[in-house]
Each structure stands twice: as C-alpha cells, then as structure tokens.
Length: 601
Image (cartoon, rainbow, N blue to C red; front, side):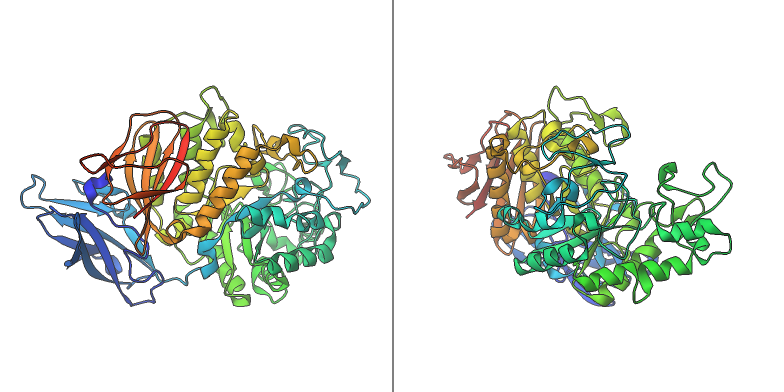
C-alpha cells in the first residue's frame, strides 16, 4: 500500500455524510495499519484557527484499525487533516492529507474538505457523458439551404483541419441525426448527452453565437431540439447544453447594438477601449467580443431575468450546462468575478430545476474556481487528461502538449500518479467525482493518435477513465478508433456507412467498460486507494460498502506486482485468473499493455 497503509478519502466509507448542512457534525474515519502504536487526531481550522479533536478506535480488522472523529462543518468549506502520533518515531508525528502521508509540516492547500454548499443532483454521481460535435456526428435525410459562410463537404470527405476553411467547412450533421443514433450511445453505457453549441453562428463550431434565443435552423431548429430532448429523456438520457459565458459572436444583436452607438444600453455588456480592435475579445479574435460581467444588463439577460438564456433553456428541458471558457469568464485585468458569476449561474439554473448540473471548461488548475457554490466540477484536463497522455503516449509519437510549447512527454507511472494526486488534493472529493475524466475532446488530439494507433494503449486509457473517481466523458468517435493530431483534425465525421473502418476491438472495450462501471457501485461511488505505482504499472483499489475492486493498468510488460489481498479475487474485466501462492500472496499479470479488474471476495 502507498502511504504505509494509512488512508482516508472523501467517499461514503470514510465520511458520514457527503452533503452536510451548515453547522452539522460529520463523523470522519481514517484507517491505520494494525501495528500503529500511537494516537490519531483530526485537525480542522474553524474560522481560520487550528483545532484538534482526538480520534477514537471505531473497529479493528485483521490488518487495520478504523478510527473515528467528529468534525463540525462550521464554514462553507471546512478543511481537515489527520495528525498521526508515534512516540517511537524520530519525527514524533506525521500528517495525512489529500496528497498523502508526510513526515514534516505541510501547508493547508491539500487538506481534505467538507462542503456545505448544496450537493449536485444524485444522478450526476452515476453519469457517463457522451460528447457530440453536431456537424460531424450524424445527419438526417433533411436537406437545408446553406448560408454564405458555409463550404459544403461530403460526409466522408476528410476535414481540412487548418486554414481559413476550417471553421467554414460544413458536413451537415443535425439534431435529428443525433436522435436517430441514440441507441449507439446507450449501448456504450452512456446516460448523458453533451452537445457542443447548437445556437446559430457563422461557423461549424458555433462558439461565435449570433443568437441565444433559438436553435440553429441548420441543425433543425427548435423543433428538432425538442424531438431530441424528448427522445433522450424517454430513453433515460440527460441532455447538457454548451454556453459561452465569456463572449458571444460579433454578429450577435447585443454586440451589433453596442457598436451602433455609445449611448446604446448594450454598450455596458462589452468592454470597449483604445486597442487595435476597439474592444476586448477572446484571445484577440475579432469575431469573439468579450462580455463585461460588471454589467447589470448582461447579468439579467444571461442569468437572472425570467427569460434569461440560462433559465429559458433549462425550462425547455436541458439537464444542465457545460460552460465554455469558464476560466476566463469575468476575468479581465483588475476584475475577477468568475466565482460570483458561477454562483449566480448555478443559483438561477437550480431555481428553475434543482436536479441540474453545471460543469466548467478549464484547461489547467481549476482549484481556485471550484468548491465555491458555483461550478459543480470541471473538465479535468490538468488532473486526468494530461497525466494519462503523459503515461500512455506512443513511444514514437511527437505532438504538442495541449497548449504547452513542448511535446507530450512520456513519463513513468510514479510521476503520473504524483500529478494526479497533487491536483485531486486541491479540491473536495465532491468536486473531483463530479469533474469530467476525459482522454479526448473536440479541442484536443484523439486518444488513438496520442497512443500511436495502438488499441491496447487506448483500452488502458479508457479503462482509467471508467474506473478512477470522476465522471467519464467519451468523445464521439473514440470508441470507433477515430484519429486526429489536434482538435480540428480530430473533428472527423462518424463513419456510419463504413463499418469496415470501425475498430471493433476498441468498440467492444468501450462497451465492456461502460457496462462494468454501471454494474459496480464501487466504481461510481467508492473511494480510491493507491496500491502500487511503477514506471509501467499502476494498481489501485475502489471500495464501497464492502465491495472491493482491484484495478491493474499496465502500459507495457513490467516486473510482477505481488500483493496480499486477504481473500480470493474473481476477474470482472480481463481474462486473467488470480491464484494465491503458498504464503497467501497473489502475483498480478505482468504483461502489457493490459487492463484488468478483479473483485476481491
């Protein structure tokens, strides 16, 4: 075991309630090795002042002692850690916090957290999200006149990927096409649809919206959206929209009105100045004027008014939102209103429907924007995507690393684990488990290309996505083996009529892993306990209410991992049976790339 057998996480096995009310007393449990001869205290910082409570022995097993202590959720975010005293140790005491076991004093940034903000709806804990880029997923038999900006393409034509035609090439996917393929999505175990923007815009990606009050007629309009949402709900699928709160398109009536005159009411909704464009825009792109969230009019139109964008489409039937460029929303030089905007957004959304979620796009460290009563979670590029890519990158692959001016490295499993733990430790368990674990998206290279085309490595990546804490987010086409070396290159059409191009091994793996997650509470609600990390292998346990699953992910052949499991192990994914040696030690398979899951009996 890592951390010498000491363990705590934010799951239900270790915390008496995951949604405490303000002032509620929460019992937390920590596990120590049977031979721990010292005491245990929990340290909290109510109102900013450290406070220690002695833990008591709750129960003992063959190999462990479970200790319990009470923590009062006094503040909206209550931080806590464990002090482990040992009179025989030279250091005298150690700390256990979210990043592990420490012999010396450490700052509070990685302490465990309890939140008294309202919890996300229960369905979100069980979500498996399927992302669709509408123009490239599927098209119905309907044919519609094209606007002047569009460059028509045949469905099986290659994407341009670079140059001025990239946002203009139009393949014709629409919402009825999505509706007709819902069976494919549910067969993967997905239960939540996330569609990139569906509002009108002069581009195929539609992040430069020209309206928020209707659905793009090129996609079938409001009527097709109604049919899709209703059919998805009838099948038990949730539907999430995609809203850009940082900017709109330069053709949007709000911005056009703001340009028309300095006295226009809409002028306050944007940031005008003396720069080259005369106004602030996302990354200096003229077609994406930036919103000014100091504006009361913007707040009313986007969030607060009865007919606001957020409220209108929740009433239509959406089950929540993914927020584009959430990390830049409300931020400009001396202004930093992101957390305030997020909280207002969530309040308006849940006022319309309490059973809704809001997820933030954030490509780096999102800790400062979470646990604040706003975004329920983030797209976990920093704490999941980047470390997974760094571990599973094909040996001969050279590609840029998600915006970093350096190629994707190829790191050992121990380094990757340290990265995952460091990012996870900065946020609450709730935010971690409601953040999206993804190996590709419409903004990134495809995982198949990252892995050098190796389906075995892709299976390991998907296995980690489905079995580690977090909400799996599948990007449409990954399950068929689609490739792409960067975001626009990966926005390839689904080859519905070219089934001979499908990677059936990868499709079977995604379906099997989706079924595995759906069948085991430990994978959806359980804690996480790291067991082993070496250059080419990672081993961890997922535990919940007596169910224990052992997971082995290997990127290559490696030295055998030997464990005392305290019982038999039955395979639930992968075909390797485990047999105990004469001393009761199990030797895990040492081949790779490989992905295995066993249920410990």
